[in-house]
Length: 580
Ligand code: 6R9
Picture 1 (cartoon, rainbow, N blue to C red):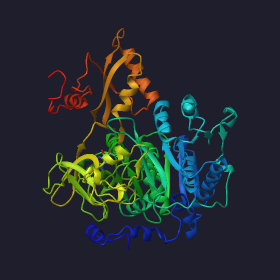
Picture 2 (picture 1 turned 90 degrees about the horizontal axis):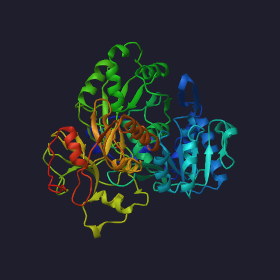
Picture 3 (picture 1 turned 45 degrees about the horizontal axis):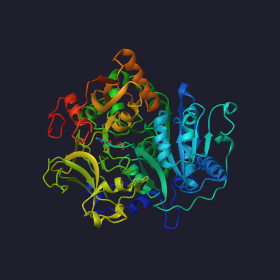
Picture 4 (picture 1 turned 30 degrees about the horizontal axis):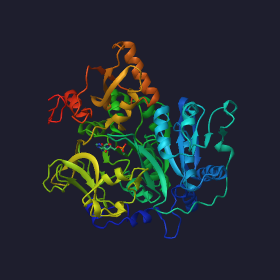
């Protein structure tokens, strides 16, 4: 009964307890994501079923059953306990998309610690900011990436252990620990007795001001993740599912680990660089049935054309979905034409933990729309000035949600004021401590949209200066802070510049210190400086030198102005401009 019915029916009869039913979870069982994705599936008699089909560079393959997940994650859990890690402490996972990443994620959660996955492409500065903020105690990494950790470890007082899980152990430093997952299969482990509110996964997300914020989730998030996986991704027992996202991004944990495995579904992971041909080959070889990806990838596939698609047998595919950026109608129509299936858009955020606005099988799809609020989600569009919900279809305002859905983030680490500022609708002194459950408030997403007369939501744009490059949010402040550390740069502003494939790429405006002149060498040097310190995504694709940057009277750089010029839009109200 849980996986059928029209949108309206499901909405009418909705209750989050349906998630428990879908998972076959009974009151009194431990609510622990690590165990739910491994032990519980084995207890259902599916221990020998494939959980992970992994492929790395050069076509190297490895396969793991749910029983492998169970004993290997037990190994990680036991190892952490033996190291003296306590429940609630943060364990960072800093590696490529190797099997150890997926298994350690479950192991960390099983013993009650918090899993903090970070992109392996991060440079030392991006890493430092996030480990420092979280007071991370242990980091799991690989030989390939440990050098970045070594560079910053002296500045991280809370970081006690560096554990290397892949690569040549002979080349480690004395204080570094080598851990080989395959050599530590532990049959029995007593799972930490977490509940819905126990901290589980910590993801950092970029805002306009300040360094990235740590959005902390709890084990109860699994209800939202599992039910949306079941209804929106439509995963069923025999599916072979592929989520292309890296677990350094929330999509890669909510729907690249927790959603599919909590439902006992087989998933594939491809840990090698993107080419359209390699992706099609992967789908063909593994008979992928459900594919969850992002508009940037879809646009790249479009660019490589239909003839390439025809060289592969993609007939196993039965359902496609997308997240991360606006999915243009053109991409939806193209995918329907060449794959015989439309990519269905889903909208959500790191903070929401699971899909909020969705298109799912059985719903009428309007290409270009993000769909309708998932059943159980109360969405609204708030007036840009008054924060009151608008009633007129077509009115552009802020997308907002009534708090209380299971996978909503529970805090921004060490930033209660910023957490509070994401909720509107009550006088300040009436703000309850448990914001996340107060249904008289609105959680405000930071995006603009409108709904139409049929209740479909249409994305308009972000309400802030955050840059969305290829589905990944990059904070301008983070880039600017790194830029001004460069010896040549006095001041800097970072904005998103339109790009055909990535939607936006980073463009920066800089003023130079005395004694420095613009040159090709300097440009390359600055680009590499950012790529190494932050990440390839944050690297500016264009650098514009200026004598002076536009500022408000209070001295804030006016990115809005630079962005409007770049996008050829109305510049808007400039009354606060310094030189007006
Ligand atoms: C899951 C995820 C969230 C931001 C979000 C919005 C943009 C996500 C979108 C979309 C248009 C969609 N975004 N899905 N914009 N259409 N279907 O992406 O999390 O990295 O936190 O990004 O991404 O701007 O606010 P996160």
